[in-house]
Image (spheres, rainbow, N blue to C red):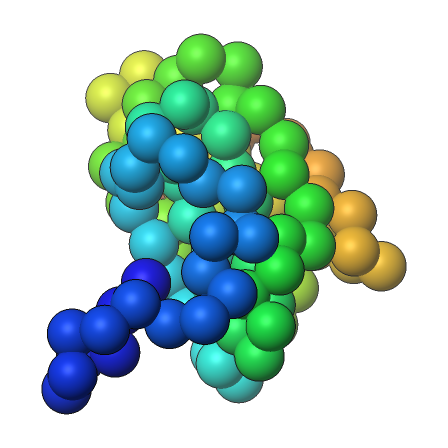
Length: 110
């Protein structure tokens, strides 16, 4: 990550564990966390103050095109073949596979 004004790399961003690039990224509503999906098909939560990775979970090999927070402790990721609802609690990230027929209910919470 870089400072948008100086274009200099921010200290500590290498500790996030992301090596190959990012497919999508989003800040939590309170700005305390960053949710991101790496090109390696892993979803991570990173603390913004330290840029340390809090937790990472595999996406099962599915590409994600967007990540949207739906509260302080949950977000969704969506891609061409998968929709996941993620919960972040006590520094643990868990996912539940969403169903496209439920998309209206899921989008209402975002």
